[in-house]
Every structure is written in structure tokens, then in C-alpha cells.
Image (cartoon, helix red, strand yellow):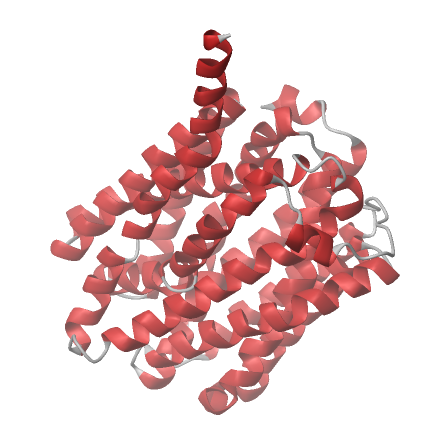
Length: 409
């Protein structure tokens, strides 16, 4: 991995360093943010509404953030993202006990932060990497981001357990703000590439690359899962089975160690030709391990999920992102239109997140409080499995048909 890292440009190395510090800050509090919000009302409704509000905010703000990127640069929007992440945690610290009355404000602030930050992230990945090496880069980035995640949850769990009430959470949230500020300073070394001031939004809507047009349904489906399953269901079921913040911190530390090993192996053998197969294996693994933990919420099942889930989710996310980036590059004018593709990506993804939250809220009418978590935890990953044949049609079937066509000639 060191040789791979050495081959990266200086700017790309600073980008990875910035992402590592940012990830460490997120790992400190990200897992426990859901638990913090859950403790305010002891139901899952507050978590669901929080996810709903930040999903809505992304749809509303992403276009505005892209406009800012055109007027300044994508890296400026990324730095503004760090600022609004800080504001989000300051809202949590400022309102603390009455935060449930300001959950809309919290969700909108977090959605704006994510919009600003990820405009810069997606543009940086597109500009600083190429399709043939992108999988390798994403896996190396995953290793560096996960290294911080190994220690952070354990530190946070220990800190929270040392104090009575919610004070430990406030200490962790303050520490997160410090790491976000450090990330902001490092980001000053990442310049990125400028984008054209002209928008090609409607051109991309009307005439995108064929692969991108077919990816709409896939991105929508991905949003359904990410709006609920990856946002808070994983955290809440592991918290419930593990039993307490310290145990949750230990669990997440162990899971991150597994993820590092997975990223290393995948980075070493990564190849764009294997994206679909890797996604399929990851999807089936997540579904089966989630079903096991839902059916038998005991320590043994949690250990299995803790081993399988980090590996499988890395396989799913990296393959999915690589396919999305490749579908953008299929457009012969993607250099001019790449920012518009990034904006439009958030529409099906954001709508999917919102639908996912509404589905979860609707499930409350059919299942009691004790059943809601395990049932929803086993149902939402089915979406990943359904996505496999859709991705096959997009990326494998056309190639197969092309080969058959050439043989007929």
C-alpha cells in the first residue's frame, strides 16, 4: 500500500490527509450521535425525522452549493462544508436537552454541511483520479479513513462512560469540532481544478451518457437504504445488542480493524472488471448477516455481523461510487458537465432517502416498538440485492451483446 500511496500526487496526498482527520472527527461522534438523539425521546421517530430533514436539505441546497462552486471553486465549497459541520455540532451543544425541539434546524444544518462538503469531494475524486486507478484509490482512501475509526469510537465510548448523564457526549462533540477545524486547515493545501461558470444542467438531464441514464433507478434504490439503514439502523441495533456506549465503542473499533484488512486486500487486487461481482458479494453478505442479527440478536450474531458488515459495506460503497464516476466519464463532454452530473446525482439519491424514511415511519403502524428495529433492519438490505440484476443490465449485458454482434459479422 505504501508504494501505491507514493505514486499519488502531492495534492492527492494532502486530500487524503485532510479526509483522514475529518473521518477521525466523524468517527468520534458519528456512531454516538444517533444514540444521543435516541436518548432524547427513547423512540426512533426523532432519528427518522432528523434523517428526513437532512435528506430534504441536500436536495434543496445541492444546486446552491454547485452555484457557489462555479463562482468560487469546488474546494471553497468543501471548506464551507467544514464550517457548517462545526455549526451542526455547535447546535447540538447549544440546545442539548431541548434539541428535540430544534431537530429541523439540526437536520437542515447537517444537510447543508453535507451538500457543501460532498460537492468538493466528488469533484476532487473525479479530477485527481482516473477510471482505471479509481478503485485502487478509493480502497486506499478507505484504509486511511478507517485507521482513524479504529481508535475514535473506543475513545468516545470510554469518555462517555466516564461521565454521568450526557456530559460525556458534549466532550466528544467538542473534540469532533477540533478535528473538523484541523481538516479545514489542511484543505487549504488542496486546490483542485476550476469548473466552467456555465451550467449544463438541462443538457445532462436531457442527454446524459446512456450508462448514467440507466443508473437513475440504482441511485434511487441506494438512497432508500442509505436514508435509514446506514444512517441509524446499524448503530441502534448494535447499541442494543452490545449494551451500552463502551461496548458499542469496542464493537466499532473491532469492526474498523476488520475493515482495514478488507480495504488492503481489495486495494491490492482491485480491478474495474470486478466491480459488479464485488458489489454482488457485498450485497448478499450484508443481507444475510443483517437477517441473522435480526433473527438472533445475541453476541454471537453481532460478532458475525461485525466481521461481515464492514467488509461488505466497503465492497458495496466503493463499487457503487466507482460505477457512478465511470458513468459520468462516459459523456464525451464530461469535463465541462461533471459538476452538473454531481448535482443531478443527488436528486434520485435524495428522493430515495426520503422514501426510505417514510417507509420506516409507516412501518410503525404495523409493528410494535420491540419488533420495529429488527424487522426494518432485515428488510432494508434486500434493496441492495435487488440492485444486482439492474447493475448487470447496465454494465455487463451491453458488453455481452456487443461481443455476440461482432461474432455474427
